[in-house]
View 1: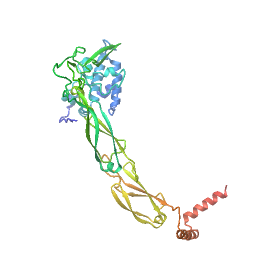
View 2: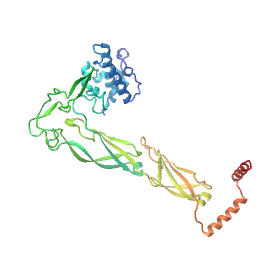
View 3: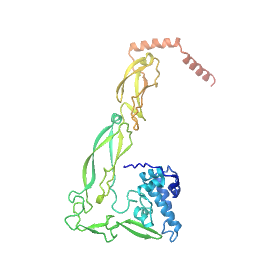
View 4: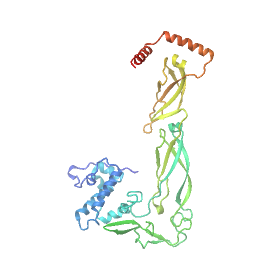
Length: 389
């Protein structure tokens, strides 16, 4: 998106007397897109000129609400307005709507949407002409190591592109185009539904404003045909399963030069046999022997980046955790890595050799003679509890 910068500050004496757009719609300054849409819809219904014939106040409120919506629904206009107010918008050449017809012309089918379908979907509010191309979706599966490092994948999609037979014109050999008589070339027709005037896409020319005398037999005159394409998708490091990427303009082409849709890529990260992700940290569960836990040890553990050395402390209990700094996943926002958390589980052998049994029995005998203070307190607590049953 082209971002504009303005090297001026409005003088106090030149401040606009226009009403604040947020106040007009009755929304907070941090309102999201859906709040802006709902607020405008309610005001447009209330002050629509066909519902309030001959009421100048209603018409003025309708125009003010439409102007506010036109600015606050557009990210770039809204940014300029938030930074520089009405004066900033004046510098861009935006001066609102001079009359109600301008509003109907700018918003196209939007008022028809009030009575069914997607009120503010992609088809509405774009003026005359065919709608933009349809957006497409595709799923990409990667493993945890690829999610940590980032990866480029190629996917095959089928999308509508310019027809190879007519080069996207929709015409087959002469005849050209003629103005649609049904809508007079406007691409829209206006119908009265009770008190409301509804603008809808012309059913005869599908919003093009013109009709083809000799349509192309391959694309039936819409100028598009299905083609398979291989798209390269760069998945950034740190992506999580379920996140979605948007590739602008990689969807279906629009008819008659209308802008293309987008390609949405759904990311799925496969479960790893060793690691479990928790945010930017990675959990690794490692079994150790009784002697390693009792005596301590130095072991080599895997990480998503390779391997690392871990020192197990003497007397480590089952379920104890050790943290390997910077061995986790990178944050998607800044690349800062989380940690790997090693959870040790003491593995008790199910079968013992004769010698192992003999040694453990000797150990058990010493434990009865040398009870630790912690175990002594525990057994005394149990003894008192049983005594009072």
